[in-house]
Length: 524
Image (cartoon, rainbow, N blue to C red; front, side, top):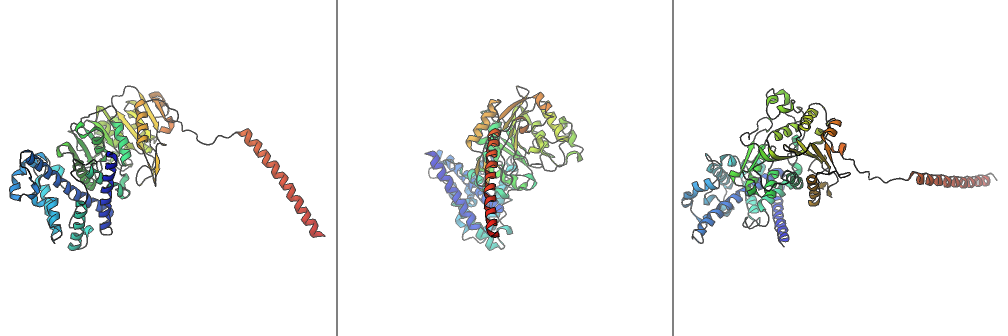
């Protein structure tokens, strides 16, 4: 019954998002539209979150019928310091989403009002512990941008549609919702526009099913962990998947990530709030992880999950400092300047706790190419850090048909063997993409956990075998592909050919006779 209710709620939510998309189609570009919807949803969410929190407190204290949204700004000011301490931010009643919405249709200065509200929310966190988590959060919902309309009147008309659309989303009391409504809307929007989503520079949005598999591999055998980290966190889907699988209360010290793209970095922080992760339980940084890692004081991490950008350029050996960086120096060589993939792997390994697991999506080329990449693979295998390599099906990611792999790293392996799994057949076809089902994920995690040899599926390769194969880590080197071609009986085939040739000869003789008769008749 819960499942039917859940699906119904989800469908309603998706319909509401489509309705806004329909209203704004032609006015706002898809990718920008997503940022505006999410920004407005975030504004509604924190308004309701704060209101519910204060109301609950007051009602429990005997103040029945209390509603924070009905207070004057002067009366509300007394709560500011306490709210900033507990929630990380403060919103005056007049600036709550519900009250701004009420006045919006008659307000010809709507864009100015929203700009002021967003500034005040960010400003409320200034000089406090939560400042970093709120600073610049509304940058991508620029209410004065031409992206929203060429004139103030057009911008305000679109802002009104946006406010009404988000207000009409049936999110109910988010604590009572059977779905994580705000988070689900976020994921739906990301999926809607994933094909346009930052594909430049080798970045690809990670589908939910791949996130699920990656995270489940990293938390096998764990019910709680100290911290979860993603060095290329994008919009935070992998971090939040860990929160969902383990339960956010079982990630004791919180969620850490770093993202180079400013828009995606802002989305990631919004996403944390939309999934009800408190400001003091996450630390998302904006910088290039390879050149300027921001979490030296927070490592090591017990769970690392990541889908770093594939084969992007980086400074590599043109930066003389990097070869002495303690993250990269153990391998004695840096990843090539044109392909940073193994630099992300070395970074993750360096920051992995001794009892931890790192689960990373990889471009297949790093498994077999020579040069510096081979030397880094040699370092990883010689020191027994690679636990498992999994070959995934092709066409799982929006915008690329590449068949990727997963590399699982550990520092505390109990044997000196590496498991290779061929999961290339574990998918169902959905429209243009392949998709991992729950059953597919279950199979792969089960094979990963059992660590056994299964013909055509998995092979547990001892160290010597990998050395013999010249440190090639391609799954196809270790797991024989099943020959699904039809088996042919040569003797039977030869007999059939002989029979066809004999019949052909009979036909030729018949045709020759007919031609001879026709020629004879024409000569008479």
